[in-house]
Length: 365
Ligand SMILES: NC(=O)c1ccc[n+]([C@@H]2O[C@H](COP(=O)([O-])OP(=O)(O)OC[C@H]3O[C@@H](n4cnc5c(N)ncnc54)[C@H](O)[C@@H]3O)[C@@H](O)[C@H]2O)c1
Image (cartoon, rainbow, N blue to C red; front, top):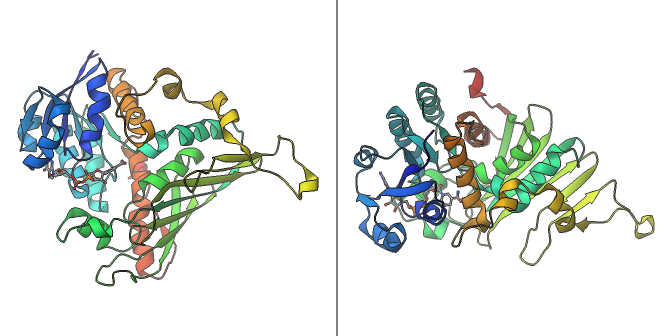
């Protein structure tokens, strides 16, 4: 078992967010970074210290790293992961795992052939509140969960330059093209996967030159029969809401904070209710949550500069631990595709007026 991972980071925009935890921990060292854009390198230079700088990804892979963070444009995740896995280099891939079914097959084949680990870094599952809700769900606090929903509302249109990857892969295709944050969150709670999906869109009103619907709604039936609703909107002119999610079970409900200043809340059947108030009441989440806080949030005080509410450090820690301890990755390649492929099949559905479409389970393919 290696005692320290020698990490290379590809793509220094999003990839730079992982410099804080990876340079803070004693069992990881960032020995190489790679980005063809010199400006991206310069922006992070004071953070990566003595790491070797590469413009070429393959050269970085050959420089003696044993682990790579793939945080490059979305369509490069699979080819770059496949190349690293082929050299026996462990891969932490940014979301989404893949942009087509063909890429999914290539990724699965590479993971099956390689002795190295692959994990997709879906960080929303590792947000403090969401990972606490997962522990509560696993402990049966909500009973049988039969409904969940989540939103990803993030206006990216104005920043997507013509010819850029977001323009091509997110805004010039129909259906929910960036789905792992909301869908991964709720599938993690449900410990389930999507069997069929139907999707309808609003059409393109804000910018009719683009293919993307302003807003798409995915309705998913899970393999155990739960219903999941996902709102996906990269276009509408409004503030970001990408951490809203909720669930309903036979024993209770959870609602995340939707707008700044709001509290996360639960309603549990076991808690006291006031019938005179006309029914049940929301209760504070924070008091209950302490009992179910995952170990990461108990043990690690967090890292200065850690992004996305500390979830970047949490998801990276899960990956590092699985490599160092030779355990299964929390989001292995099959789970990565559980979070990714329903979005690809929703594109098929939305183009056919919302018909239900089966979602392949790559475990049996
Ligand atoms: N999990 C999250 O919260 C989160 C947040 C932001 C972005 N992302 C994901 O991270 C990825 C990158 O997003 P971004 O916002 O940083 O995009 P970006 O366009 O801002 O940056 C991409 C970077 O990759 C570099 N690059 C391009 N080709 C490369 C190559 N062959 N090798 C190495 N570097 C290369 C570019 O020069 C650029 O610096 C996307 O897939 C996105 O979906 C995830």
